[in-house]
Amino acid sequence: MEHQLCLILNFGGQYNQLIARRVRECGVYCEVKPYNKITIEEIKALAPSGIIFTGGPNSVYGEKAPTVSREIFELGIPVLGICYGSQLMAHVLGGKVSTCITSEYGKTETTYDKSCTLFSAIKDMPEKAVSWMSHTDFISELPEGFTAVAHTEHCPVAAMENKEKKLYAVQFHPEVNHTEYGLGMIDSFLKNVCGCTGDWTMENYAETAIRDIRKKVGDGKVLLALSGGVDSSVLAALLSKAVGRQLTCIFVDHGFMRKNEGDEVEEAFRNWDINFVRVNAKDRFMEKLNGVSDPEAKRKIIGEEFIRVFEAEAKKIGKVDYFAQGTIYPDVIESGDDDEAAVIKSHHNVGGLPDYVDFKEIIEPLRMLFKDETRKLGQELGLSETLVWRQPFPGPGLAIRIIGEITNEKLEILQDADWIFREEIAKAGLDRSIHQYFAVLTDMRSVGVMGDFRTYDYTLALRGVTTTDFMTADFARIPYEVLETCSRRIVNEVKSINRVVYDITTKPPATIEWE
Image 1 (cartoon, rainbow, N blue to C red):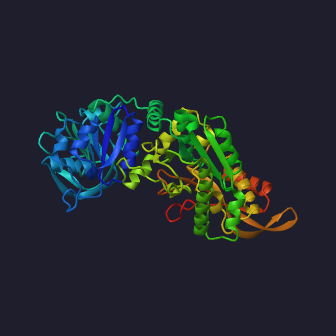
Image 2 (image 1 turned 90 degrees about the vertical axis):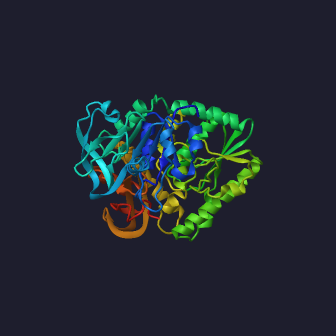
Image 3 (image 1 turned 135 degrees about the vertical axis):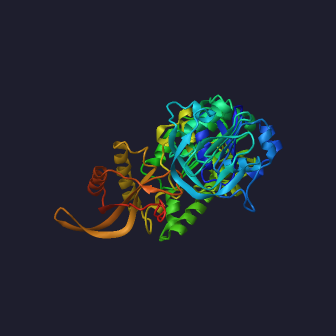
């Protein structure tokens, strides 16, 4: 890729992905590498405009504490150390790190030296502002050539700089929203210290990616398992622009998608320059699931059957040169894989799929993008809004949102109820602010009264969550009037439901899905 690069060295910090996202928000391309999987020579070859050290859970004096060579500070490349990264910089360069008498966690009033390059360019930044701290050690003695440029009540070196060598360190976390003006500090480091222009956009990423794909694929054939999810749909659009009908997309419709969704996926790609194959395999899946109620058994059966169906279709095509996967950057970072070897993405139902497909090589053109960037790329490529903003959806689909055994009747009930819930959330303008929302058909029946008749019908649960990483989640505070409309419509319009409940459990202790 022809652009300026900011290299992020990961020391095990919990916010490493967030730092990378913030750098890209500033219009600068970045890559995250484990500190111990890259050499000085490799750093020189990458020629980054700047380097950022992440935080981490260790003490610099710990027996197995992550460290770096002093040489990294002598390359003439600007460095910004964050939290553990700041202490590591001080330690390696001859300063002293000590245990805090009073540890600091959370929002902390911080006093800044406005003459420091990190802060001077930030418009309207006051001398005192809140930063987000999380540390038990602190820099007690500055390395030679450094000046303290921020402090708190208990931390004399909340930030330090060596202006001449372009070395900067902050004890707090500028990447989190709780640090006031934090994004401005990162932007200032990138633009004013590193000299980055901030012109990295999805438009030029798309142009470069299309050119790279064409060069790699040549006149070869490409195969993609298209799920209709955001990642695989954006990948299909990108490959279509790059190689056209050299691409075949196989869309296995297992019958457990949301109402009309299979048709929407097909419609979205009907006019794209690709070979699009839709396999309607609902009857085959339903037969395999007959009498099965255990959630893990459902997942396993659907996953295995998906592979069988895909394999049968792939055999009709014959040998392909490339198998495309929608791996995105969080998958790469979390797997710890930072070399050029392909990551087999075990999501949706395609885990292990390459064993059954005759191909030469895996390609993953989205592997350096975050989810929000993937959506932006989809918009740039002209993909339908329906697919670009599609809700996260489990591979087995509604099969694991029907508690107990799956029947055609239950599936139809849930599709209709879920459709009403999603329609009302969109009408209320909440569809972009609630990160995941869906209906679950429980296996519980209860007594109700409809008209003059006693009923004994299903209870439907509604679930909505807000989250940044899907590792933890809070329940969405959907206004009562919206929930009331959903409940009224569902009970009135969907057969066999006489009670609607809303799930107000966080993750943990609950999971986002019910099964």
